[in-house]
Amino acid sequence: MPASKAQRASTSKRRAQAIALRLAGMDYQTIADRLDYSSRGAASKDVHRALEENLEAESAAAQTLRELEVQRLDRMQAAAWAKAAKGDLKAIETVLRVIDRRCRLLGLDKPARAEITGADGGPLQVETVDLAELEALITLVGEPPAEPGPGTS
Image (cartoon, rainbow, N blue to C red):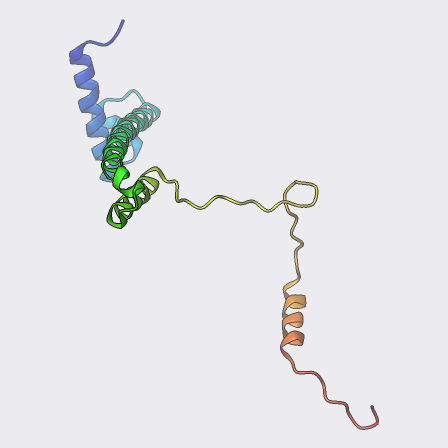
């Protein structure tokens, strides 16, 4: 049976208080004691559950706003498209700005992730280098060539 409105309101209020106490630096045992949770784990679980629900709600709201903004950009692009297609430079600039904004909004400009793999397609193996050997190599590379000494040609 689903919780009553009064139970949901009480749970919501207690979760808000638990989050506020956690933000104030309280540990979960103190939160459990103050808000009559059955245990430290129950307080922790309730706080995490509330934070996850909040993130899900914020994510859904952000997605809705993103979709609305894309629709607005589509209308703006459609309004300028005919003139841009006929070569109107100002309309072309407008369409390009709208496209650029859409790409940034949707994350289409993010760089592609690249992964370097070994010859067999597996992870690239990097050999460990002794720091003393590396310093010696750097020193050798940085030194000018030795001058021939007496008796050498």
